[in-house]
Image (cartoon, rainbow, N blue to C red; front, top):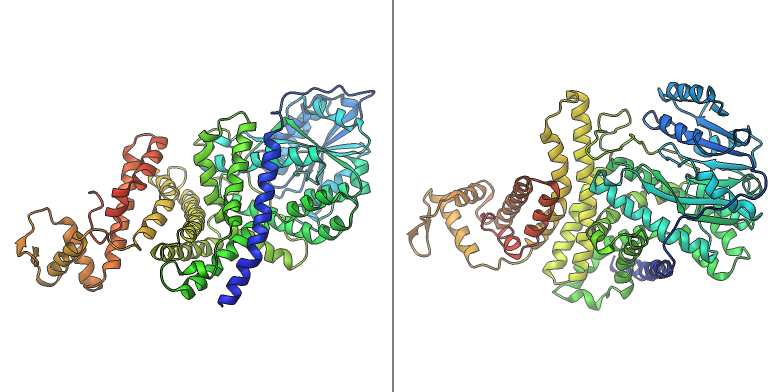
Length: 627
């Protein structure tokens, strides 16, 4: 077992080093690029015909909005058409039909195209639509996107270059401020569109069409073999095939198209799973052609790292799984170092996304240090998705394209807007149980590492523990809300919403308190209080057997401790610690409730949870966390 664990560490660490070093390289190159600014290009000669394609599947909340935005694009009507590629099975069909009829009455060439089934999913819909138009250029927008009227006027001049195969624009987020969860997702997407995309496009490295907010040259699509459903990321697949055929990718950072971020944990997890599975499938299909291509060596290396990007969380998860056997083999404190030293690569891997996210926020015109709490929190959520990504790899290895499950959107336009009563809201999924189990296991590993003074391993483990528990508890909290709304209606008591907030808020402090509870009690009072509680449990008298004195303090925590010992055994100090941790978490929740404002409450909880006095008093065998 130890040999296998060492092999995992030996293989994964260099790969993580390469991935982390490349993220730092891309961040460094992005740091030297000027910030995006408005750029209006004149379209030379006669304006080409453009077909706008909107693939839709069950999008009742956002379908009409995107149709309105697409039909309002500023382009000559005789050179412009809109295709609503509707595979829906619900009332979206009627919503689309009404919107199309309204815009056709205004003279816009917009068509509502239906298929008999979902063959090929989004790729199949785009291919079917392309077969019904002679337009040489095809703009693609998903249902939750809102292109501005001047989108085509600002982008189409890029295709004056005959080798420009496709154009991608930057995504922004019109519901970024909805919750802390959407703000974290925005950080990740900003990193892709403000660091990765501009650097790759500027240096001629392979990059990807992101599936929406872009324009394709029809000739490039046909030359590359057309849309294919062999992967779940048809956009990544086609963009790489086109670039391998010599077509150039264009990226317009200054043209921003807002989209809606998932507000549900289940939706986010499903989106990440689909993107990861599709990326792995693309790697299986495209790595060999990429490495055999005539692209420069650096471009081939960058393309390889890009296609295998989702391997990073899988490798990190494998490392976590390898450490318990090494910790057992190591024995005493500090013994792990002679078996394996975490290379600098792991630290680099942990640091690289932070640097990249900070650069992205700086290029967005924000003070990166103001975003630092969110950047650090993203590491927690990112590590929590590693299980979903690993399962996606297993599904990709099974072959076949897989089922395309779209990410539900609810037309979220303001903070506090309700979505859980919506038609597409789902309860918790089976993966939540696995995340809970892994969260507990990683917490125990972190606690064991702390007790043996393996500080880096403890930090690494607790990061994953926090991530798994955060996603699992968040998903369960939202599931409670969804189920309750369905059964009780919209008049759901506010406490159910508080339970969801509390699950997110207390996940990280819970992991921290359980880990610190593994350490020896620093106070001699712990033994004295345990002795008094044990005496109370046995004799019914509250007294100090060491000094023979009656305790004159209020005996509430002694009675609680005595009750625990009477039920579970007099020597069960560990359970006393767990009770105290639970009381400590209750204290944190009380502080949050008393703060008055959510932001002040979160800050108060963070400051108290990191206070050394609170940490020590809430993790000993003395049941008095309010001290």
